Image 1 (cartoon, one colour):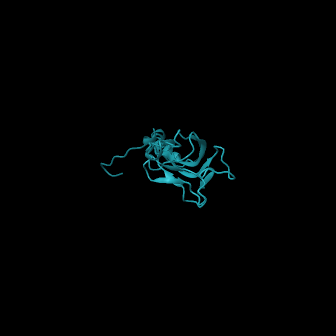
Image 2 (image 1 turned 45 degrees about the vertical axis):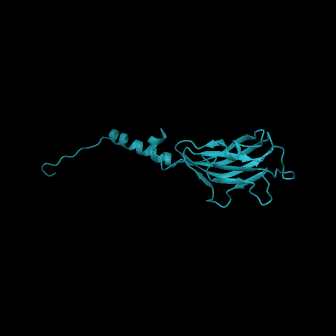
Image 3 (image 1 turned 90 degrees about the vertical axis):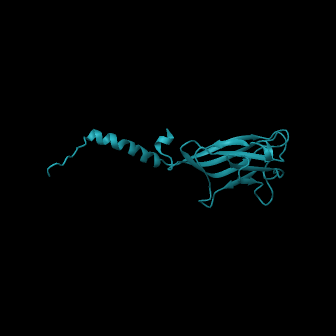
Length: 171
């Protein structure tokens, strides 16, 4: 040892206390994703609108929990008495993020035949899922639908811990 050199030792307990928050943060980032099925029952108003129609506020379908992000991998519209043999072919429905006035992420009728219900959108190509950030909402808006129609909108979601948020942000 040289003269005038100080050094400090760390006990095993002190080292564990220092490393434990880092370990917890790494483990939380390595958490495997959750696959969720989020069913929503949607009912049109007496004018055949969802979420107030074209100029409405929109109907909140789902909100991403704080500290998470989500990939929407499938959206299914079904029910209301409509089948592939007798589909609903009038009206429209938009699903977008945060506000009814936002650019649509999905728009129905999405098929060339103009079928609204039943319909299915899915990310079968891989990597084309719609990414929704922490605290964002999925909002539905529609018009021109039958009055007082009740149908099902089901989302398949792959939900991840958001690596861009710190553990402190998640508390």
